[in-house]
Length: 171
Image (cartoon, rainbow, N blue to C red; front, side, top):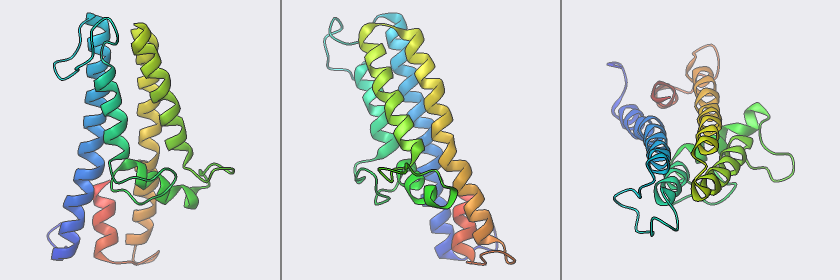
């Protein structure tokens, strides 16, 4: 990384934080929701009555951290993994043919909604199965992004320079 110019170093730090750290924090929040479900207790930052919903707040936060607050549905105008999926799905043919939304985002959302329903119902085992699917679908844009930026960084490929290389390193 020593050969990266300052702008590329900024890209590396920003994309690394957005993709790697957020990915892990999403998993942390979803696992915390399942642990709360299994324990039958509300998490400490859940302001919902335990009888109403155990772990729902943490589960909702998992989706919120994946998509981010600047994200529009089906667009790549955000900064987090959702936006990356929208950005790379066209190059890999993984955008939904009807909506244009990245299939990884559609599947993640479907399992987030299903998992929330399972948490609400106290069906922690099924929520854990949703979590397994979410992990799979959250990984798709990271792999696609790594492949895309490997090509863009390659002097014999896209040859787009240090910024493209830094984005690839971050993935």
